[in-house]
Image: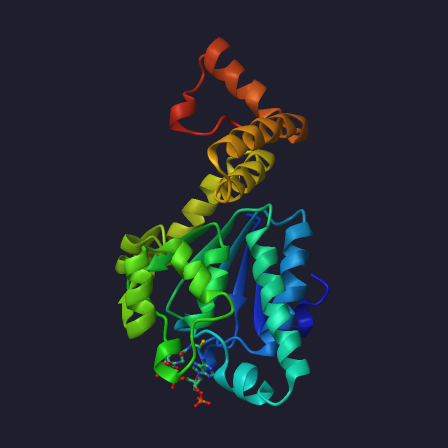
Length: 275
Ligand code: COA
């Protein structure tokens, strides 16, 4: 990672299992997202995307917070009279959130603590979210006088029911990790002490799959959300063909052979062994 030594708001650690631990690293500010944090993310996320050593990306936060959302001082107040600076950091946030959302690698949000306002955009951009039961979530914008922008209203409404979107956006009430799972914001809630361990279990499970099949599956699930039935049928047929050409491991042929000929495993119960 070329810029690793220069990073100050973001931390990257690629472990020997090929998991990239990407952390918001402003614990003293509860990992509020400043313009500098956005610029660093904008640089780092594409590097992780193209680094062959990275198989899974975990987005988490240093200290007691995942992220307290946009930095009210550095992102908002200090750029209120500087449209150029606001424009640059707004687009930087938008870029890196989209990079994350469009990543071909599995992405896991590991929510270790506070998750407020603008933090919902990168949270929703991750494929899977695992949270500490004790984490605190909230759309706090209403409390201090803005609407949930930068695309929080959109991503929150896409994740939860209309009733919950209205309720939490209008009241700013907080909720914990268990509630986040009930609402569809996170997949799993575990005690904070087990959070990292459970995340590693999940990452290992994802790494058992063919990376090409995973990437195409992610793209398919995301793409069909905006399609009608006929479009989805056509898209998925074409995508299936493209996957067969792209999967260098020929997982499909291997899976069929191991199940039908060798009778060595059950596709319903786990991934076919990779070479
Ligand atoms: N923007 C700027 N600074 C923030 C921040 C934010 N979103 N969230 C926390 N900080 C800063 C505080 O100003 C404080 O800085 P200081 O030490 O220089 O005074 C520091 O982080 C610690 O915050 P503090 O409020 O003392 O921590 P806490 O643990 O008691 O409370 C929160 C944590 C997250 C509940 C509280 O900081 C908070 O409400 N933050 C704002 C959350 C929010 O509304 N985000 C939405 C933005 S769209």
